[in-house]
Picture 1: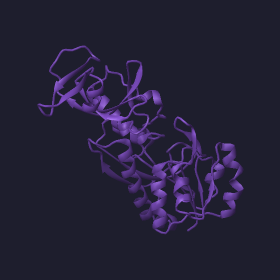
Picture 2: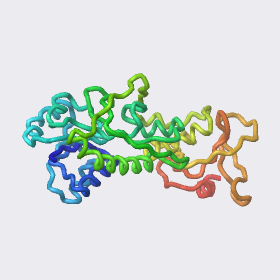
Picture 3: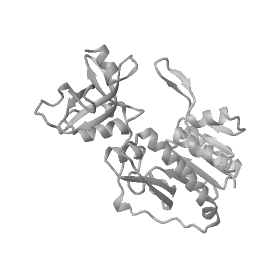
Picture 4: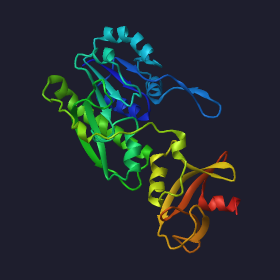
Length: 309
């Protein structure tokens, strides 16, 4: 089978690596362009490209920045005469001109149980909304976002400790395994895609840095979910003494006081010899266990208190 792989972030790199290790080596890979990263704005390749270059696979890589640039390479993709296109977190909607190139169309590895959580941020939203389960859906792509018929899906539970990073890795492995399982049946026509129940569709939006800013009038449970959903980006954060303070790890305590929302105080918690940083929320109180002040190192609450009594 000849296929083209479309994908960009770590999620896609995990899927691609497992496909290759299973013998599904793509004819070409399409990912987003290199981008400047960090304070020094160092031009950095996306994870999918790094995977291919580091492992020295002789695969052609295309990095179109726009729809026009993608369409400009369509003749090169047509020349491959692919049977299939496999998409995993590519980051762009594929136009009809591209979808029509593969003999069997394009299939997407989406990190939710469609039709729930269509869009760019399904993993973050499942954590934010306190869902108990999520999964992977393999679907045939049409011209609308995550709208096409479902080929197969599989469920997994969400634990109370799952962050975006950890859950994304789990789902990528799950997605690759499901792809390897269903590709032969899909190509042969044995597996028939089934239309989604569009009336039950829900949607996510693009996550922005500002989404990570903590509103302390929210409940401690909501803020705890934020710290997991937004790790490692954009990170849950607040302002302290005029600087950004990243809140990396928290816990929830029973609320036994009537302090004003947003007040920071210390209590004995977990052990009698440890003083914990606690913040009063709209409902409940939040124990801050790990944090990072702008320009500083990641610190435990104890280490932070030693430097900021």
